[in-house]
Image 1: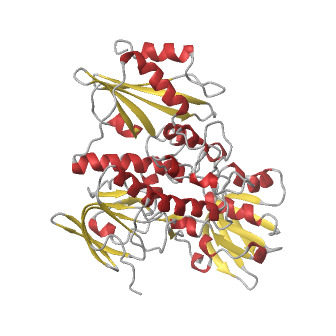
Image 2: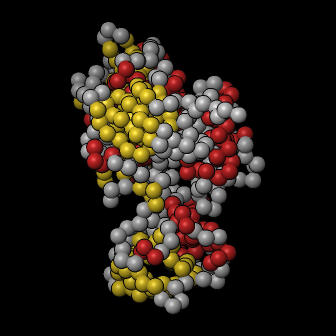
Image 3: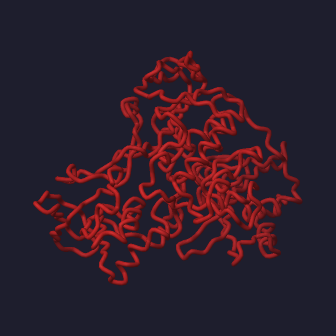
Length: 497
């Protein structure tokens, strides 16, 4: 039987998207909806990205509530379903909850993978699987992406390969230590003393999974675990991974140390860790049966650095503009978990949720619109808002807008006030771009959680080129369509509404 021809053969394309994880699939879907022809290619043999293999203990840290205060499939329901990709048609929405068995509102890894696969199937996303990205070079029209199947020429390259490359810091002896991805079955560590290098997602996940097996668990890294931030952001371990920390606080035997690892030695019985205290100075020499590097991941950038793509975070992430374009090589964009490299305002020290699906799925939609407008002159017709409806419009978005709730202080909804066009709803854009860029008179609204855990809307008003920030009061039920809120917003927008 002849082999079925793969889609997207090598050749010339307006856009090439690399990666078939949720970031690549969401970007491809959004580009297609805008009519942007593109090739989606992936080294994998099917959709899913890292969710085909991880997390190690097979349970996500992000929720999807099967039963929620909003109707499944509605826009508002997206706030309660952090794992489904975004579809425009009813049959394309809220797919992960439909596949969950109900034993937890944190999906299992297989349930998450199944949801991604189902999204690709239902939406008809075509990807050239088994096509390995090998190198990249410039040409007169843009970029040449060389793959195992041949060359792709494109004006715009979108890299959506995830934070998929295991990373270890430069510590003498760490080469003998297995990384998170090399984790053995938990029962292997029964009755052992285990040292975990790292106190972020990976470290707390492994500690949580080993609690019933290991005799003692010690987590060590230079910076303290910031519990106030961890509880509000999936860029770090969420509350359900904090049981090891509670054990530490209660003196249950497990320990969380703020230490810099100086070197690791092999011993007859395991490993010896030499460390120095950071929060509390002092040298430590500790012996363990096992050591695991839960030190995170880096972006597999291949040779993009040779093209001039600048990196940061110990060379693990590419520097990006607010619209996720390389800060140093125009035309190269990033999607998926890599978009955490676009830092945003980082209000109250809390990072974006761009490391997780419920954050970067909205980034992908904004990115597709930005690419369509900037590179191909395709601008969606934006709706107009009557001046009598402006206040209600903004407060409705603040109360029920899932993009603002999932990307707090990072994405904002914009209304533009134009003498010629009237009041135009410009949709969602990165808040950092709105604050820093010049533009016409307009207002942006976002949601913020402050350091004390208080959730409130924030209004950014640009008049005559100056942007002023105004915090609106919180509400215990997160309902902002109140008489008080209406009066405050009307006052701030006096002269426009």
